[in-house]
Image (cartoon, rainbow, N blue to C red; front, top):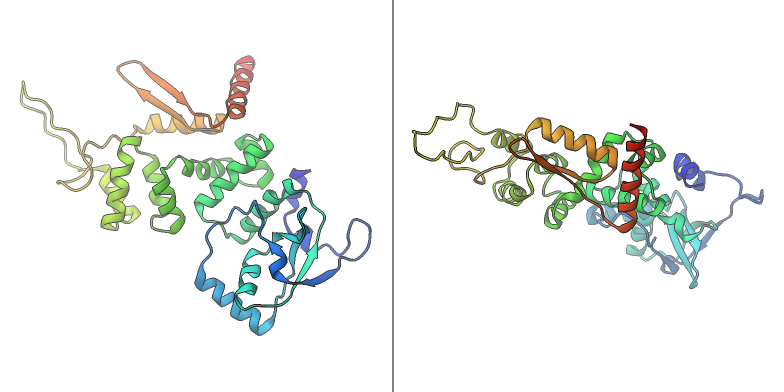
Length: 304
């Protein structure tokens, strides 16, 4: 089962001394050019300098831990674990690399690639969020299911998945390190219309997380009451003229309720308040996701 596999982690694949048939696992040496990368690999960015260092280490000491592969339906092999070692080996034109061959179905590749990267902390925040999302979609899991299978706190899983609510340009900046997870969390606290302006301010001015937080809080001095008959000046949310205009930050109690509902339903929930009324917007990302949310809501209503 996937749950048992995720719980055991990748160690069970590499460190197990026996195959299912009871025979010792055989380490073979094959041409790395015959190995296709894991099609479900959640990691998309590889640091060139780190790969060069690994390549030099392999050149000096060899590959200390075998790669794990499966036989590909079209011939050759498909990587299960060890993409950095594979890439580094190709850089120095190794003729053969040590591998352990395991018979695994293609649908297991995502889980194994994710577990390896989580254990090694190799994924950036966006890659991790996309991998979480793929796991949920593949297994029809709720956020609670995913957190349990990965041994993570539900709040941590929910916060990571929220990075997918950012625009593509913001996700690219987060994945590339131009902004940090702290920046991203503050951007997510803003209304959609304000995020792009503040994102530009972070990139253009090099704002730290603390500086961004300070600007979002706005001036500490009380706002003057407008002269009777004159319209009130818009609250820009910053001191002076710095920062985007007309910032619309969610009230703390609204943001808290959004987070509670998002965690309960496993998707983005937005609350829009007006004068004594408002609306709740629940997002879904596929027909199956819609059906899952509906079942969950109806089940909770029946229990109430």
